[in-house]
Image (cartoon, rainbow, N blue to C red; front, side, top):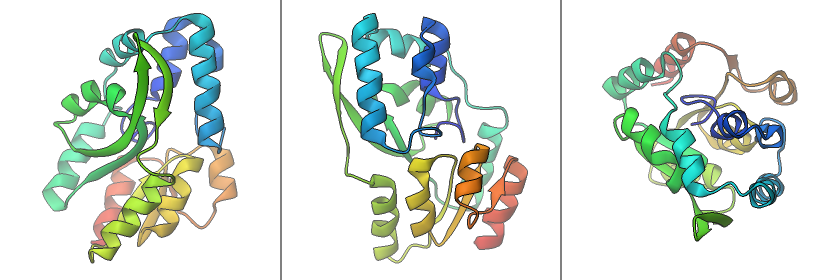
Length: 191
């Protein structure tokens, strides 16, 4: 979701709070647990609450062209968003995108402070694709980060989209696309 359809939530939080350490995302850090524990530690040290993060998210809009892309995909096929975001973060963005199906994780919150997180499943994106394939669905996937690559590898067709150079370089087997028109064309060719 983030970086493909919406801005990166953590980057927006970093900009609004003035805490540059929160800019680190799965585009730079492949170990999700390490990244989340790093973020939780920073939020604790700086007193950043869930409601403060939700306030930032409430001001975000989908990326330019994302809503038209989603509408066109929905005219052609079903859509599920597999994301490593959290239920408590996603609601305002899901509303703006007309409530697509979202599979994501859940934060552990105590007195408005984020104290931990609960993964839906380890490697949930790949496992969701695997489960859909077990139901005889063909899956076309797109993502931009390290945490998307197992999903892309499991999918019948996988594409990098708006991926940083380091991810494109490390995963040359996935076509790297930069525009929604190109992604839509590739998806349509796979249907």
